[in-house]
Length: 300
Figure 1 (cartoon, rainbow, N blue to C red):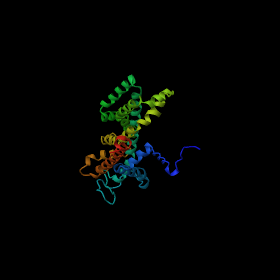
Figure 2: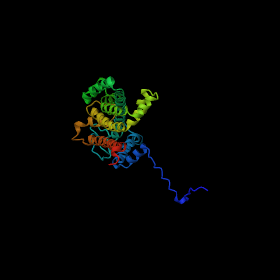
Figure 3: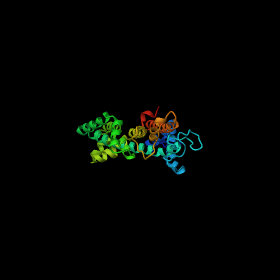
Figure 4: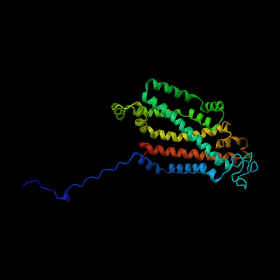
């Protein structure tokens, strides 16, 4: 007979529950949703997008059409938000102008981020002469007066939404490039990257499928903030008379009425407020993403 005693089932130690590991993306989303400022920015931006996209369908009109007497004050029967110096309805131009402003801001930011990530990734991954050459190019664009260079590009190729978007994208990529370079220099020597090289992965796979996904959090924040900067840039060019004269935008509204700001303040104040609220919403979202995607800030 065996001398080994058998413990009763009640005396057996209870198995420890396996801790649940939360996916980083789900954790970041949870942290973002717990940020009141980020949620407020998201709500504001969604409302602005809704008005810009659905507004022309609900309120069909020509933004360049004369609809009231010039300099009609707000809350009038013919123009709810007043009319500008030509008699154009400010509400109509505000709704239709949002489309062009938001489109230019989003596409220009996407272009600048694409250029910055590409050049920064090559510079940070390869280093050496490639890094030196690309950083000299980055420094060249950094020391150029961005607004002046954009004005020259728009003037040479005639003002239009395409040329304005390209000009903004060409002069706005340097900060993203430097940020991407720093991230790639941090990751290129780590063990998981060396393991990919050891199994024969090519440079293209390591750059775009191994390092870039790990470097995305700060780049996502940078891309979000670039949208607000591009919107302000477009407004500045339009204010100087270098926007597309055939496309209504918030910057064009401000620029065309700047000489009448004392007698027609509403034609400048309402599009200015729209730009302010839009950039504020994008900035709040960017700050929320920064807090959610940065592990060091999650415990604040």
